[in-house]
Image (cartoon, rainbow, N blue to C red; front, side, top):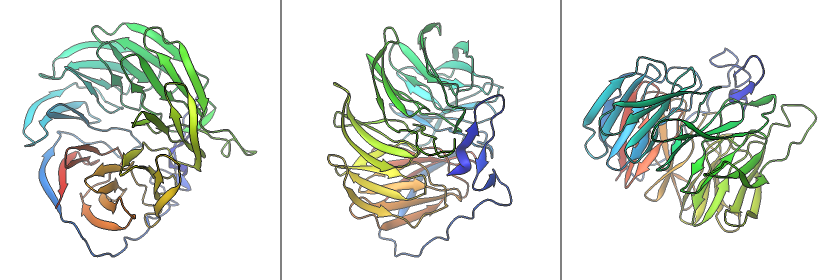
Length: 379
């Protein structure tokens, strides 16, 4: 669980396993378990994005909007691919290091540079529309609606920018704890409200017109004597499923909230810094201990738990067909039955998987750290 820990003060220190990222004391991933594959993984297409994602911590993920999937590399390359064929529509080199994943919506794309500059592009051509300098790093992908681009900064701020020309519409400021995980949640932006999890363990709803707080709930309460024990980050992106918002918390709870009246429907003691997925009436959680668990969406009862991926540094879950997919640090995609959690298939992408995988229809899209985008299906 230590691989995303960071002191947020004058210096950020990223830890991995029991030591620094890539250090000699890093915990080795569990060995792959043997099983009889019930499904065949088919590569519909594969494409080189024109750069890689580096070997440091990142939250770079692709974005799907309409018939296209968009990718970015740490070197500054941004690409558009047809989701069906993998044909590249365009490529632009921004010639500046990028840090966060891509935000996409309508006719716009948004990326963020290593120096905290937001760049908005035309989704059809890749042409630059505007730039805006922010006050601190952004490591999670921006989110858009028709009028706003919303970004969550690593210093606890949430900033809404005018989608047309990049001017600041409003800012929400929260006090970030001194010790947090390296990373932030990505907000959920609707037409009139923005929902966001914070590093202090709270979850808030903000008015998109003014940035005013409509309501807030505590997802995780700080407990323990040390600062490490008291970390309560909400780093996974909230999930809206059947008119309920589900929020993961590190060293806290997975919480279900009615977003219309801010009522907490249930809270399940569980630690996760990943985004969630849903299907078959379940909520799927990649726990911080690298277990995958299915919770009943209505009651929070545990439906099944897959615990054979420990120390494999798994990604957030993604639902494809009747399976749940997670990637790992060695580049494997594991496909798990939504019914009872047993393995049904496995595929080796050849390079580390860190960012969330995306699904459209019956296809899973995985972006490897080597800069390879794969479109996978199950047969």
